[in-house]
Image: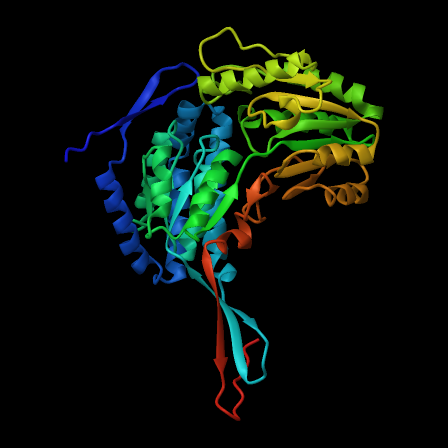
Length: 471
């Protein structure tokens, strides 16, 4: 049989120019990568965790040394403003450093007192090769927040990255190679989405994690479930940003703009539905529209640019369809709402109000710089509207009363709830959602324990002889 190499093109969404061409992983190469992953796991899982942590620290050093190169690559492939791209590399450094310091303590045996003559404990043991299906919007961070804990835990990783960021996928594999990880510890598979099920079903794959749409998550979960394989889903979000009457308005408006427009509006935890009580609705809306309008749209390589292009032309077109349908159903456009007359996949900051129930801007995730502002009478109605979504990733509430803020935060149906702060991820804190935003957790102690065997070990003392308990 003759294998035909298929090429993948990387296109700059700001210019439409092809910036790189990559060979897709052939079936023969994929087979070799899977076999090598199994072989590497046998050795890697037995490698002392202290050495695995040292290599993670070395990966952090590689990231630091090549920060500008990686930032420019992200900006070139998916349009992220260059300053935010540098921040993303730094966050990858952070997660490597975090697990380089804390992995061992997170995976240390947990002794549990049970019978007086027995020693019982939980041991956390790696599962094997884990497939990670990652999106384009944070092309380095999403991968490293999977890879750092799992490599530290003794698993090996195989990456199926989004097809529009193949350069980032290859660069990440090179980071681990340059840091000294063994061949097969982390491997990029440049394969199509149609091949994912086949890889998940392969007996050599022990688990799968995906960050993506809820539709993609359902498909992955169905396949993994049919094979009884552990899976973690970090899916979409339509995060509410609740503004109460005693909100600190200056900080609230400033953060609202940042929370909606970060990464050109393409973030699962970006604030998308702004739920504002009637008493301060007019003030918030006026100031919010003014600040959104003041943002600079342009070349993402320009240090002065606030908003670059959408990651692909088709994504910008899909976003505009959602806006148009919302307006057709009775919503009002206070800002933007029309594609920009320029080359590239650019879409302007847009603010929608008076959005009817069940319109796209009310029910769907708008993945771009489009904000929807809802007026509600009071706190109770704000909480109800915040939870009136099939998603449950993040939520925030804004108020001068911190006790009130925490009480409201506890009522959000979300995996993450913030008071007077935009929703964000942090290596020290578990990250994940509920409802159609998925299940499982990444980061912190919970994240490193997702793809391990929580093995209960019971050591019984000899008859009549107590086994000394280790506290």
